[in-house]
Length: 342
Image (tube, rainbow, N blue to C red; front, side, top):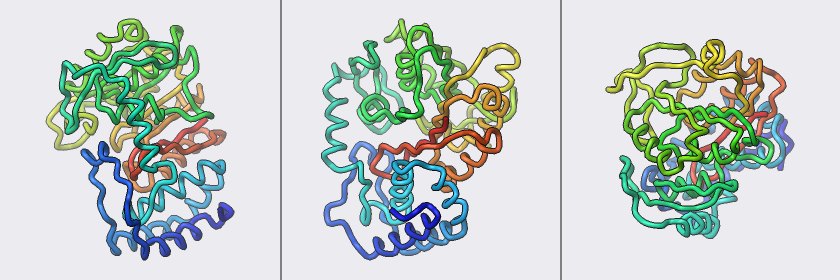
């Protein structure tokens, strides 16, 4: 691996080599393809990515220099895949056998069909399995269970939930991450989950009803985490892809973590997970005092914008310059990159 000072030069050289080679049998994750079909990258796309990398080369090099070797390797893989796509590059951790093993582990926990059917393009099952010493009942898609509970998307060996933590779950969706986090935080822990989409919250409540012991550790709020408190926003509902949008049809209210701590609703914050569809930076702006005061561990979705890894890490460092960063990525495609910080 090239020294981080030449990180982007090496990436660009690799992209130029990969663009002229085709994988004869590319790996396609069929479950992910239902919601994110693989798209071949043409020459124009590759040229645009190369130009973008050149334009931000100093920032990418500086970011890479902050990472440990494993995270630099993950960053390299993510950038290569973004540039050339599945026909030219395969994620090192996403062979057909590895993907199959993760799904097989999740499939082994299916006990029947789900009683509710959330608005998703893939089948929903009922699962029964153990997680961190707790028995869980869950209705979800196979891929969600594989990602959250088998390969553990929001867990990093250096950055993870600990017993007794107060956890912020930004983007609670159907309750799967909240249930996972409640099990990981243990009986003395607490999970405050934010899910502004009304349809998602109904499914979330069903998830909690299946897990009454864990539900006692969870508070479900209908606000959307943002940089200002008490604003009226609009939401475009869409299951796991629900997002704040000016043309959204659902009226919601915003919440800033700083204000929730100031007014005593939240006593402290130990861990923050954010996957809120392009709104992660806004939520971090609304948590500046929380980061300054508590320095919570962070697991932030960093794939919605092409330079999220740069912009979100710069934002975090502008609040506290003593954070260390790691990268997580568990899928075979360009989605679900997580920026971990501690």
